[in-house]
Image (cartoon, rainbow, N blue to C red; front, side, top):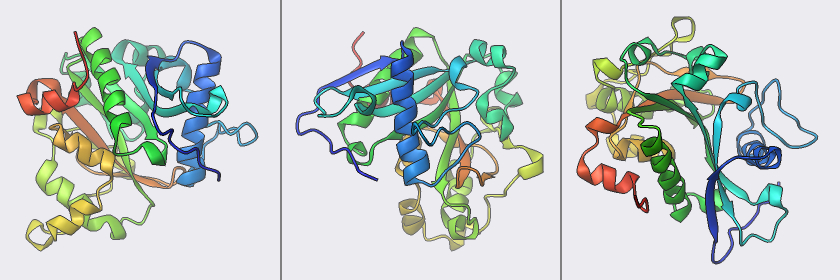
Length: 263
């Protein structure tokens, strides 16, 4: 797969999708990351057009990061994506996307304003840099506008070999398990325990190095993980559910999360 190189001086635009063309650009990026890079699949994937899409797309808001300085067609200038679903949008579908994997009743019955995050991705050359902070800034503005209190969504380890992921999964369970009022749980038919290794037997440094960067970023922001993992064979991943309560974030975490956001 040919990779688009990050421009030397990126000129970023962060916005919500407004046109069919912008949605296709988001789906193109998702295809490049989830299908071509990570080996995923899906019932509605359009391999001919190189678009990763599903039945939930029409109901979500799609936050896209565009690098205007890229020498590429418009469909390939989207370098970052977040898919966002508020409770009122989920009601139109009849569920949140992640309810196929996790029992969300503890959140849905809380009376708090919820936002589900999904399909988060960046092109490789944009990971770990300013692009992520631009995405977070856009997300923070969206959260502020809609008065969101709790954010959640699944995040993934690459591959489906649970034994190979035993150490990082166990570390997340022992050190970052959500408190009871936020503790979603993997659906019973496919509940994969995460407490596979006793805490005192984990090489914590090595295990944390094996945790994907996006999950580590949410942990730094004060996020938690739900109980149990979900093995997603179609997407070639092991998923955990991340939950972040904006009221539990301390001042330092809020400063990181809202970096670049000006009221």
